[in-house]
Image: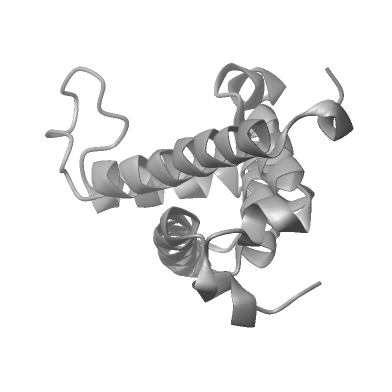
Length: 156
């Protein structure tokens, strides 16, 4: 079914699903970096602490000087935290979705260069990036209906 053939209620469901999936993904990754999913080396824990995440950031950015890596790790973490909260709130949705798509694409690029394309494909980072860009392109009436917060949001 083409996007133009979807009904408004269906588009709202698509928007909700994509927003929640992206937001929860971002916020879960941030929680993992601070041990909220468990200690390092626990089952289903990627990092378990920020030190391990900084080491992973270094692997994904072999071009970066060692002194710059912690700043990259904090920048990624802050971006994921802010974008996750904004996606949940629907605030500035077109901008937030576009920024999410760019961030996820940059993650995919870093994963591909640092650990190989298979890691980016296995983590579905490109698919998540595409979903974020698709969210940004949803018709404006779906993004703004029922949300006074978006009435004053920046437009693109």
